[in-house]
Length: 72
Image (tube, rainbow, N blue to C red):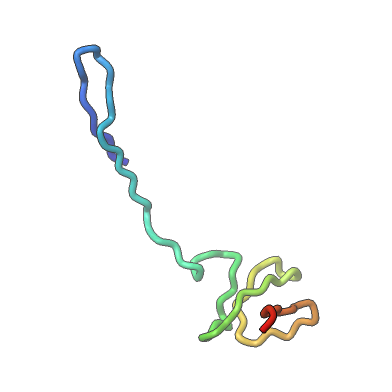
């Protein structure tokens, strides 16, 4: 973080600019609780309670999963 300022007659410091830069961009594949081994184009992310992680799947076979697309 960079901070620039000036000292006036009343000896008060007034910041003129504050700059903050993030370390780097983090990717979803870098996260420890997301398994991306089965990723493919069009994949979805689904929570797996047995492993307590999220898994990226292109084929979801789960009786608890409902995809509601609305009314047409």
